[in-house]
Image (cartoon, rainbow, N blue to C red):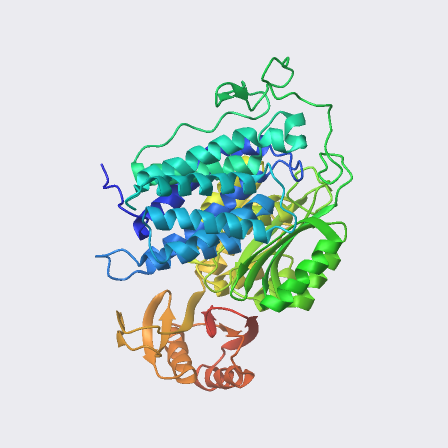
Length: 576
């Protein structure tokens, strides 16, 4: 049996994220089914799952980057990664609020993970989430979060000698949240009429249940079953938080209201609320964000803005999606913009339900420049920004946006192999034929896209794209962050590393010289075409110099240059 943690250290945070993801995976469909507030779009469970998936992936990246292997990463690194991952991967109203809850907790847990710190973390989280919501409403996840914090604080206060037990505090938080969840239909009319508890609150209960299992080693009893068609479950002495569809109300039941009933500001399917959900990440200062809040609040409702330190996650429901995006442009630099039309059949896509195309290509790219290039070539793109790899849910969304019967998926990163495989499997379960070409670098993806022909047979097209990618050797230049051992020797912080096919092959003092050496080594094995992808801050003069170097030293080899925009590496190289 694994050793239980004495406090919320880095390993415990990792375990919590993993167990929370498992719990939301189990309950996702049921949570989706009871989602009636603020919009009855049936995706709260999915959004929470994708948010936690992003948080868990960020924590795993911290552990993967920890070099010693003998000890775990610092707790502060793990909790900050959890919060940041949730922020950049937050989905929907509830996912955005959960991201702020985790961010609020992280601000305290970086200083300690004992019972007192956890109690304070829950309080800070609940307060931060309320401040992030333009118009807080009781009977929602905010109410459940507050109850969890209050129950944890009461447990700490009850320990007169100051030695509150961590297990007792997490149990208290979960119990308080569960009790508050059962009362949400009494606080929010739309829930009472639908005969369900708040979907976001139920998701938070699942996340807190995972925390209980992390600390105690035992999972608590599952949340009451509250989806359509579920048997009512008594909670707190007999109050009922669910009613089977078509059932007859009895004393204590939450009565189902008329079909389609709901408050004016909280439309159900076919209601008159805002038409679009707009979500984006935003790089902006505090003053700009304060003005943005005011402007977006006037444009629509369900406004939630979370984050800080220059990076924000914006969520709002509006009729004018363009105006919401323009407001973000005026405030700073919005990206990962996602616009959902609530009237679509799936609830996931702005696309009008037209006949799907026969075939499409979905490609992950490391910067805006390549995204534009691939879009012009007809591909659907997903941008992987530095330190922000896409989660499987984001790849699934891209496959849906492609709206095709057949999709070729190009992950362009060896680290995304499992993520892309999970996305492909999910899309296949939805009836899309997906082929995953295991491209390991953006230049391989460019080569594969160049030979794509949608008019030929699917298998033939996939074989041709796979062959083109496999025939492309790839390299990138990177800056060493610390002294370390490499296959090319010992590097120092600040050295320029030339990685060929994923391994460090050259250690240099500057980008131009290192790039020339890398090119010479790659072309020594032959080649007909060199592809150079320049980072945002790399001058055009470098490309000109490298083109001349190839032309003078390697006859009959052509060179093409692309601007990659804001990407992790200053230079990407491909040789075909």
